[in-house]
Length: 79
Image (tube, rainbow, N blue to C red; front, side, top):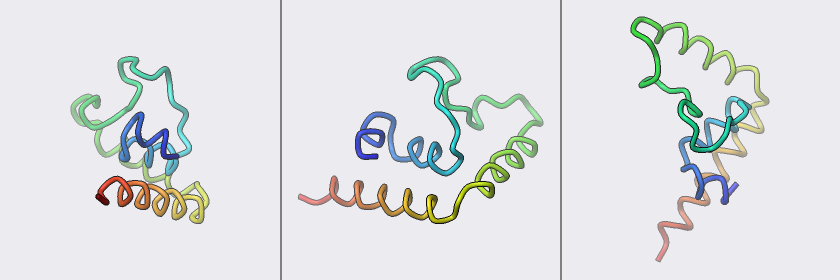
């Protein structure tokens, strides 16, 4: 998980774990779907899909990903 956080950042790493989404090629255009990539008027549908993906995953896995990412970020912040 630390390598993933270092490579793509904590937000994107959490997104992968929370949604169980698969990553397309790193660095490819549109590899990380986000609000900036949505056509006008598509936010509601995208939000519904995203929250459904979150709800389908095991809560213990999501909690573990949050805890691990928090520990990684705290270790980086320590002198």
